[in-house]
Image (tube, rainbow, N blue to C red; front, top):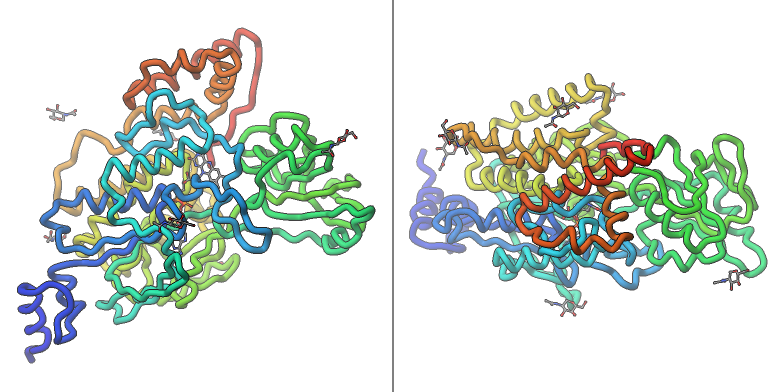
Length: 524
Ligand SMILES: Cc1cc2nc3c(=O)[nH]c(=O)nc-3n(C[C@H](O)[C@H](O)[C@H](O)COP(=O)(O)OP(=O)(O)OC[C@H]3O[C@@H](n4cnc5c(N)ncnc54)[C@H](O)[C@@H]3O)c2cc1C
Ligand SMILES: *[C@@H]1O[C@H](CO)[C@@H](O)[C@H](O)[C@H]1NC(C)=O
Ligand SMILES: *[C@@H]1O[C@H](CO)[C@@H](O)[C@H](O)[C@H]1NC(C)=O
Ligand SMILES: *[C@@H]1O[C@H](CO)[C@@H](O)[C@H](O)[C@H]1NC(C)=O
Ligand SMILES: *[C@@H]1O[C@H](CO)[C@@H](O)[C@H](O)[C@H]1NC(C)=O
Ligand SMILES: *[C@@H]1O[C@H](CO)[C@@H](O)[C@H](O)[C@H]1NC(C)=O
Ligand SMILES: *[C@@H]1O[C@H](CO)[C@@H](O)[C@H](O)[C@H]1NC(C)=O
């Protein structure tokens, strides 16, 4: 039987554009126009917006593309929140005033958009904030960005084959607006829900503060100024980049700093007078007791640099994502976050929930990596192509079995996929990025290209994350030579060459002085 409503709709769809009186919004939205909402204007969201706008104008001219960002500007974590509220209310960003990048900026760039000449190789955070603003300006992204707009909830209304996202967005005045979109692209970052550990006995320890002093335990997300800990005894918990950096900074002011880590540090060693400790076992009314039985008294502050939980509050709100800490159980109609891994997703991007089409919900930026921006772009290209043409994806069942295979492959290599989550192991980010682009070219029937997505200099710069480049740059700055070395460095190739030269210069010097440093591991 002919479905007359459908027929009328498709005819109308080609004549009109926007809502028709027959209520055939969805059918014709798919034929003529699409609406896409991106959430978040950090590195990942900007990458997605730029990539959508790169589509041929004839493809996207009727599309409605909006990026919602809850904060006052773009940049994500790199945009400061100068006066964070006290816990438990969350700061807008974990950024602290003395943060410098832990990775050299040439590798932190979007492809073909280097930092301005003269930028230090390991700059303070202001440069990265500015870089994102420049990117938005250079690629004409601003007209599509709605700042001060926070997405409160988002639910699918429709069938597994057709429908739309019903979104509630709160603007700067606290007014709530309702909007619907065909496609949702989530780029909200992976560092806004602090992972808080609780030690046995900590209540007693806090209550037992004496002499008008206060004892505090808080997550590094609230950490701002090291001078606040002058004359204190501080224990920093966690051996990731934040734990190392925060303990190094606080040690310049505190009476004594301990860094408590459960296994050997992954990201270098703290600088400054920091005493290493194993994990905390428990607290008593006066003591912090470590797993090796050693005890520290007179501790004033414990800073938890214990990372972040993977949460999606606005999707949890409508039941699209359910939270099951530590679980590996999936529900066919929902996504699950076990706080480290969001599943099941196709290539860390598309939701494989059976409730909506496989190109309805995409995530950009989940595989946080020092090579994050090129990875965001590769993911954005993949997501954009599949939003344009959903037939580029195999049926869901096939994608699920592909996912099971890649999880099995990780297990064979000794990693638990439900524990490492979306993190890229060692250099696998390059194969991941290349794989996304290659898969698309094959599916689109485009010829194999002899150019690669990942520039050879980026692969090469993996070596520079081992530590010598950073030590070399510090030495150049201390010698007052930084500006001289930066002189004339503009193109990507010149930035790559600068990294090569500084790294070699430092390694020669270290060899000549018989200095040996442990390699910093490559897992970010
Ligand atoms: C302390 C720290 C230091 C780091 N140092 C480095 C480094 O040296 N080198 C490096 O490569 N990487 C570093 N990173 C990783 C960094 O997170 C990435 O470089 C990158 O900035 C992540 O971008 P993103 O867009 O994925 O997420 P984010 O930067 O977190 O951006 C997400 C955006 O989404 C917005 N948002 C969230 N929820 C909503 C909502 N409901 N509605 C509207 N908007 C919303 C947020 O306001 C935010 O602007 C660091 C991270 C931290 C926390
Ligand atoms: C966003 O909010 C800030 C205050 O937090 C305000 O200064 C700014 O003008 C607002 N920007 C827009 C585009 O509404
Ligand atoms: C830290 O202690 C020293 C010596 O006891 C004292 O001179 C100094 O004023 C103290 N500083 C702060 C910020 O309390
Ligand atoms: C989940 O974990 C259980 C127990 O460890 C295991 O038996 C099961 O195979 C796992 N399932 C998946 C999908 O990994
Ligand atoms: C969409 O992709 C499929 C599968 O590759 C292809 O056959 C089809 O021609 C594409 N459609 C458009 C409009 O490009
Ligand atoms: C990635 O690492 C593997 C082993 O760790 C190595 O064999 C391979 O050559 C590396 N690839 C690149 C591009 O660096
Ligand atoms: C790609 O290969 C073709 C022929 O195989 C060659 O003519 C061309 O120069 C190559 N391009 C690059 C960028 O290497």
